[in-house]
Amino acid sequence: MKLYFSRNLNPRVAVAVARYLDAPVELVHAAPLDPSQQEKFRPLNPNLRLPILVEGDQSLWETDAIACRLSQLMGSDFWRTGAAQPEMIRWLSWGTCDFVASCDKVHFERVTKQRYGLGPIRDDLVAEGLSAFAQAATLLDSVLSARDWLVGGAVSYADFRMASVLPFADLAGLPLSDYPHVAAWHARLWQIDAWRDPFAGLEAPELPEVPRLDAAGSKR
Ligand SMILES: N[C@@H](CCC(=O)N[C@@H](CS)C(=O)NCC(=O)O)C(=O)O
Image (cartoon, rainbow, N blue to C red; front, side):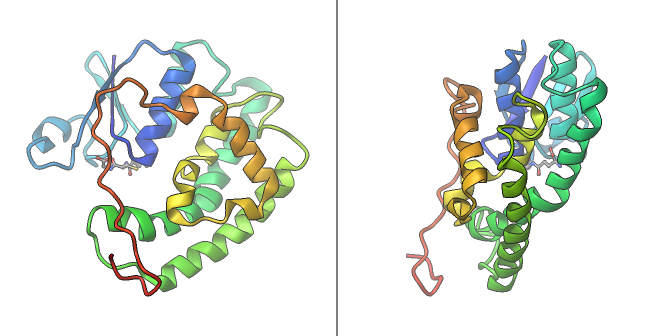
């Protein structure tokens, strides 16, 4: 079983899940958008995106589906089943549409676009993202004021998914410290080796550096 990954945020989540569950997968770095790799990867994922899990002649794409499959294979309740499942799905759904989406809107402008030379930062979109982040982080902060983890008394996939962008929060300039319960929750996640350092010991090139910008937003 192979899990194709890069160091970007969605594959980072999938590798963290594989490592957290100690799943018997071979972790293989890939770059499916690279023209030289597109022919190989198009049949595995027509979106040419990562992560991709290949099991025999089956390929599975989308981080959530891969986390579900790995949890199932390992007989783990990291992907909650039974009575707690609706609650976990609630956080995955709200996370994708609200909290993670707001983080990613800012991250895309300030980090992804700058890493890959996809154009200047659009300040209007950053402002929209930061405003959506403030709203979603306020709700999440209130939820996490009463509990350590999103579902039940232990970490679950909902926590990893909700935190997808947070390893890049400093680079993106997301004001995490304004939300102390969210910051404390992410500090708890950071104590989990698989979350803090999913790529430990793997052969995987670093992502292109994000050029530093001056106060006026020009590259230095
Ligand atoms: N909805 C997909 C998104 C996948 C995606 O956008 N992956 C990006 C990284 S975050 C990608 O493959 N970029 C090219 C690369 O990393 O080489 C998921 O949840 O897995």
